[in-house]
Length: 391
Image (cartoon, rainbow, N blue to C red):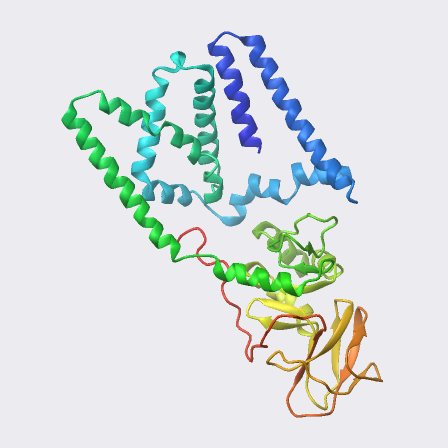
């Protein structure tokens, strides 16, 4: 957003200076700044009306994890300039087409209309800002690429004015480049996000409207993230956040994890982010959650006949017994020293659970599960985000 507004502001000022309309340029820039400030204020007020503190929302906007990641993310992730080299190599011909067009248009900048000149300045500024940034994630490049594409036709138009043979040769080269570029899309289609969508659908089905979940990412946008201070806030564990949590944990400080746990997550979605915190999260998972799929843990506990199991319940609600294949089961339970049958309401905290009948283990899980499931015999987490930036 800052890059967009800076590029647009410079475009307004630059166009005004070229036309010698200095007063209009400054006024347009001031209107842009005031409009941007009004939007940020409205954003803060919206969340303030839903229980958040206005100053805290504004602090998150300007100094929160996202802003820190933009400013210092490259230090946490190491050198990321190879991402620029990767896109330039994969799309060299297209970049040449766009940049050559940008250069050709520069030669007649004063002859452009006001709108064209603003678009040219904006395209140049946003491209420099994005490609010069020390942490150029591929999704950030999208801020510049569409605007570079605006000038991709300038070179073909210029060549068309020359000899017919040169024009025909150029058209053939461009056609080959475009076909080759589109052919690569077939490779992309093999790398879809089907598993991610399946995981989100399962998680969303397991969560009631008021239930919370945790994943350090914010994958289920229709449900509340445990640890968030207001609805819509994302508790994101990027590498910078993970490093802070691990460093704090080595000093015995688990405040950030405890804040999430106090949010009563009914389920956890596992990914590389939770895996990076496995040494910190595993003690919480061990007595409180059961894998219901490769990448989803649900509040519950495995019960073995004849053994008294300690269940550290993190999610207050109604529970019942299930078999490993997902079928409901019936067996008398002893919960905190008292007999119980059928569903049992459990508050947050420690509970001793015991059952005697049968030989196979059973699972005490939330009673509102409506989707088929099978508890994996051996839990193996699948890769949820596979080669996201390099496939």
